[in-house]
Image 1 (cartoon, rainbow, N blue to C red):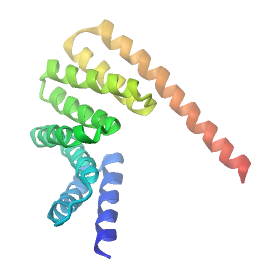
Image 2: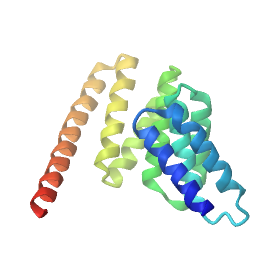
Image 3: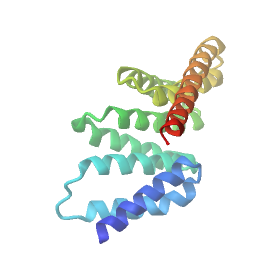
Length: 177
């Protein structure tokens, strides 16, 4: 089944991005994106949005900042009608990371703050944790150490909370077995 093959290709690319092997992810995600856009009945606009975000993130992690920023900016526009808030956070984080690496710190700050606010509004601890760390880095690079420390403290608190949650889930699974 061709569709199953390409879904596997996409998910493998996503795993590579999450495991910091973005260079391996890029050809897979380009292959998937090309396939998905080539469908006559492109019914899955959501997957266009998600795959563009994932590919954009892979490009930024591979130091292809302009390409990644552009792709995630386009993905934000695709995602607007879907009201896909979690994916919007990921887009803003990708854009902010790329802009920070390019030393466009004001724009990086704006995107990281947008990510943080959306993550907060949807109560996504994982995305709020990522946003906090990125904001701490941006403020440190801007020389605003007070704000950097504020977001580092938020990051530590949230990261500890995520760690505790993960451990609690692992213990619950062990007890259930």
